[in-house]
Length: 393
Image (cartoon, rainbow, N blue to C red; front, top):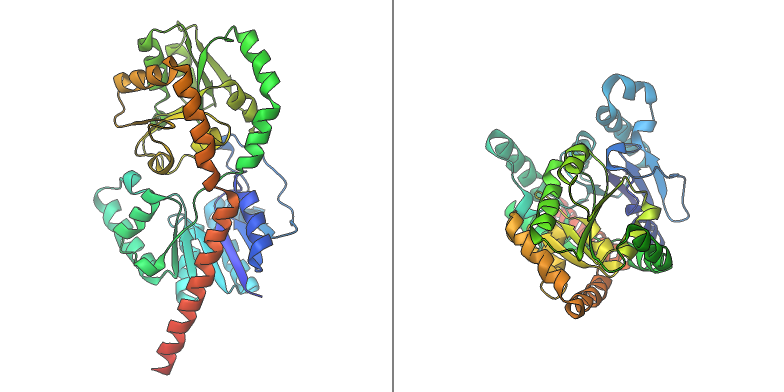
């Protein structure tokens, strides 16, 4: 039985269904390591990470709390990874990302020991904005990683183009589309329809077209554009819900102070998000430097139209005029027109929502798991064959 070791950053709620499916269907002995116990900045609720039926979970920076307090989470995780590696002796490594200390340690160790490895993540060609010395160092490192990787797993078109830009060869590239649990989200949203109807009534929004933003309130998300566009649209039928928290919240609330058709929910737990998806008509994500944007997957699974900037990884693959609007700029004027387009025609909007729900079905947990399995099994065979040929020579 092949022992596959996965290294990821933090246990975000959308990864567990994928790793469960991977463990169930791969036939591997699967161990999933997370560098850190939790990233509280993103507002996810911490969950139990006990051994599951299909895979084992290890939180690296919990292995030595004293070391974590001295050196910090990243260094503690990197040191713990060395111990895990020597104990587990994996046949294959799947590494999510390539820049943090635990990830770099894992990749260098795999290279040094000749262990085949795959790199996966939300790397996006359009969000690859490093400049100067940082750009030179990044290019040197990624070309080394690309040259030695058994597989590079793209989560979408912008991800594939990213790896091609760093020298990926065709036989190295595999696809495992970034996915959420579509069926669970659809069921959860449908179950909250009556709650959503009452929520709209209490807000006095029964007849409104509601645009929803979900995410952190930080500058690069450009949430202020949503508020300015809603004001410029000057349409009493359009309303906005901002679901999330972050450093920009106070300034955004001040900006929206005179706007009657804006509600800030604050941070929302994952199990409460379906209420807002059920209440809303369309999602807005005008963020820049957004590698993927899984909130788009979630919204489409719940049957929302989508407005998103075209450089967002998910928008490249999922958003077109049949499901919403793909923005080309970060201008208030363009976003205003997009909101008017989606908001003014009920029949067209319903068609967008139906198309969104249908399109996202191909971006499933099952398909993502099969993509990863195919990458590992195919590249394991190729790597083994090449290594044997080199020994014979």
